[in-house]
Length: 135
Image 1 (cartoon, one colour):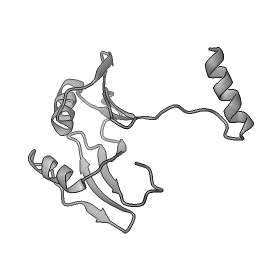
Image 2 (cartoon, helix red, strand yellow):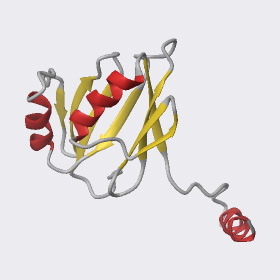
Image 3 (cartoon, one colour):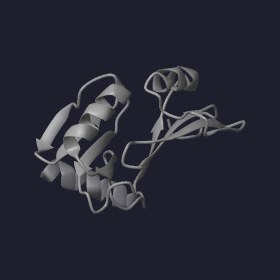
């Protein structure tokens, strides 16, 4: 506890407010078992964690997590952006599952692919070309 308090205090002294260690994105789905199987195919691996019966989580190599959780009343209303390297490979992988990959954008700084999960949640894959952007 003391170590966490010290880090928080140091951030406050620099004027940064609170200390955030990481971010966890989440999307609500109608049926967790079906969604977990779909996301496992999408990510080409099973969930890394099932911390609660209604939650499946995937951890990403450079940090961050995606939580998929069962909440039928909120299903399909989410949006998450996943930073990737090699957007063309992502498009090829996603296409194998019959997922529409026609919604793409590109600029000098970033290229994106937008898809939807079976519940309608928006999933953006973004490849940044600008070193100053989130990766």
